[in-house]
Length: 155
Image (cartoon, rainbow, N blue to C red; front, side, top):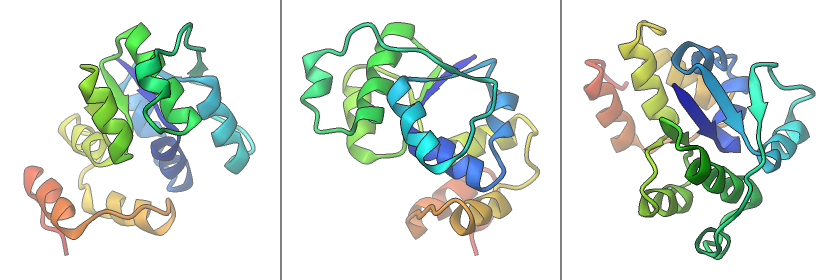
């Protein structure tokens, strides 16, 4: 399975020491150069298993979407490579990606997958770690829904 990621999910996973979840779920983790540049602003180095691939073309429908460079390149690359999912959390980027028919997963969806594949025993502690170390914020109702989906309870 292949995932293309935007910056914020990988940053949060790296800060919370949870980046290995990506390797457990996907055979390839791909980012575009703009995401690599954004990540290297906050991290001295990236895991060697992250591949960097440049999109060949960025359609006007993407460049005119009002997204940052990382989101723009990630969506364009996903249109070219047809990954199993595009890992992106920002609402505007998710909407644009879905409008283009791309399969989209956010950070919380990734945790649900990780639990379903037995990579984490419980998602609540991982969410708390992402909030504490990964500088993540999630709405209370969303957290309740995600936890309910995996038979856990948000505190």
